[in-house]
Image (tube, rainbow, N blue to C red):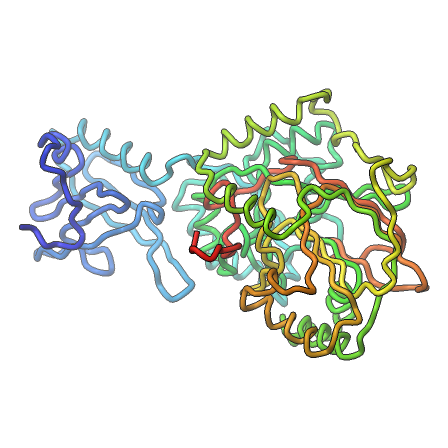
Length: 503
């Protein structure tokens, strides 16, 4: 019995031809075999060089970047783990005899099919680099960690540096929507915010937001988008995730304030979270610790942020939210099936064309309140926080039930007059995954809201980490309006809600 851990178990009923088709004999002592989820290489050392001895290695299909056949050899480029959170491009080359070429051509095609699955090959990527991101190191990180992976995967790349705040809005607005498949923001979360709004300004906004996937190559101080979609803040691992990413529809939120309409992809907050983020800009040298510091200071003061609040609730209780999330997580439909389903649902009762952004079903902040909304005084508000993504920082998932395209945004509200001990436990619970279950945490899924701050001359409102004027505003969710690249095609990479039975 073969005890090689890299060898796929072959069911005895399978005909020998399948084994032959999956294995390509190369050179004198080497072979390449298409396993279940890896390329099995017999005759290679850790650096990719041929050995005469029969050393076996497995390269996950996910890490295979490209393969091609020339007149004399087969060349395979892959992402090799070089450190805990770093991958680097490596290449293995093997001679192929001319009589074997026809079968080798088919084998290479099959390898690429296995390596990419439903993901697109040779993506056309517009890279936007914020030269000030990552304390000025964004360009250096891109050249060192990202560019080699894109090149090895045969991506077509066009690079442009942003010159000033709002430049990415202009670039995205004027971009040819047919020229690129992806806009990759080499930055923190600020550049993706600008890109979504630039695409939203186009005459064919809906078409552009559907055709062009927006992704983040994490090179800033805030990399929430990458944590949610790529599961990492490593530039090289994120680059690999973009190369292999599945096109995924994602909800976007219209924020209306005064006569302005803005698109949000990440979160909105009023109260302690907004103030702890925006009022601690002078402490950026503390990294993510500045946010924790800001929250603790305000919790100990028992700060409240009075307002009037109206929400359009879709799922009102935590058990219902948990069940909704469980069903979505277990849905194994392909991303294209999700997109088709959303298109069909959105078309019901609405005119679907590509011009501009969708019509606002609930109106703007300047319109009368929708008849089924009730404006309720909330005089002891401590925290109003809406999340379209699950985690806002590493190991910090205040919205564990958030989903990319369920047509809802997750709303968390907490009173500001809870005990200091309960408040501190709340902060700690976000990192331990117990925040959702705390009795004083009100968690709902909603499709719209209006919030009117009161009894304050000035304060902080944060939309995707950007400060907005301290004025009333209204939000409305547009199901599946945007497009991103994700690993799964239907859920975020955060751990999410886990039921007691572990499902």
